[in-house]
Image (cartoon, rainbow, N blue to C red; front, side, top):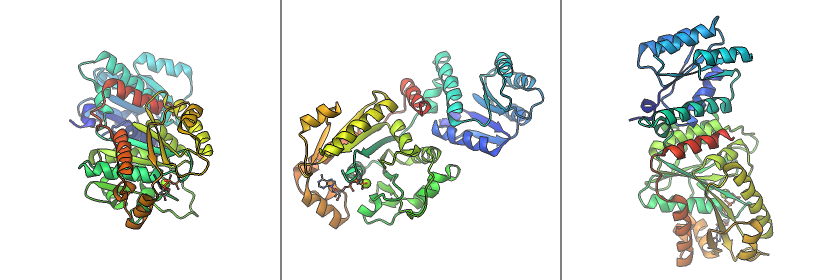
Length: 405
Ligand SMILES: Nc1ncnc2c1ncn2[C@@H]1O[C@H](COP(=O)(O)OP(=O)(O)OP(=O)(O)O)[C@@H](O)[C@H]1O
Ligand SMILES: [Mg+2]
């Protein structure tokens, strides 16, 4: 059963901005089959009359002469099987109450925000879960067949890209379809490190969420073996990039069917997209060396991540250990940042040189068993098992994470 078949969302809105926003949110919560069209109450009425009533209807009542009457007509046409979220332009609590009394689940005043829609959607999904345990709507609606892991560096040059590529290489080597996504579109080096042409489509994808599809992704990605694709870019530094979380949500959504694991190399610029990743990745790792500046920034990143994701699992990986001037001891580092280091990869100069010369990931180029073993351990701790379809609790918390953005 497809996600759209398991939770059907229909939305009708009069203006393009609202439609785009609805489409982006639908993708973000894993409802790629959402049907979004132009119009108002009468278009919505013909849609619900023409087929099986959807489970969720978002209807724009901005042009409706009598919104209450329209809500009643819609609810009666769907025999109460549909949760209706109304949109409008009148910011009046009396109208809000009258719409709720008439049976609308929520009323949002335009221009609607992603947070507003997500919040309304979450409440519909949660009440469905509570009332219909035989049909776990939200569990199927937001289930994901692929796992997203993200790595961010406490400082520049600590080895995020090396580790992301090593994880991608190792997992792909086990026959699992893997994508390494380098979100630093100006300076990212994932493609360069493997001597691949930087793709041309990543910026397009991230700036045009509505146009994302498998073909565009294939054109943008470089191949590093049968199961490993690299999405990376080399955008001119002259270009200021305005990358929005909706683009990333659309990309991850489109990757789901064809990637068991997506490894994200997250830039430390901490724009909206990086923050989105920090919030929503299934697993997050902070990569650091043992220098004093990296210790300070690991501590700051940990506290940022805790504020964004609560106690969700977080890995701390120390890389280049033994190779950086002015290192503090591991014990002092852990005490200062208030967290244990989960994985240690020692500095291996020969491996780094071999990786650069052969244009291979560190894990493929390293000759020292200890380095290979440490990188394998990093890969294992990050990739884990491929996530089973999300259960109810996980689905809800994932949605909650989106809602706290
Ligand atoms: N364990 C290691 N031992 C020796 N050298 C390493 C190790 N890990 C990474 N390196 C080297 O450190 C350098 C920086 O690595 P990398 O580009 O992966 O870091 P980064 O955190 O992605 O940097 P940036 O902040 O520029 O994105 C590279 O030359 C890489 O080969
Ligand atoms: Mg990098």
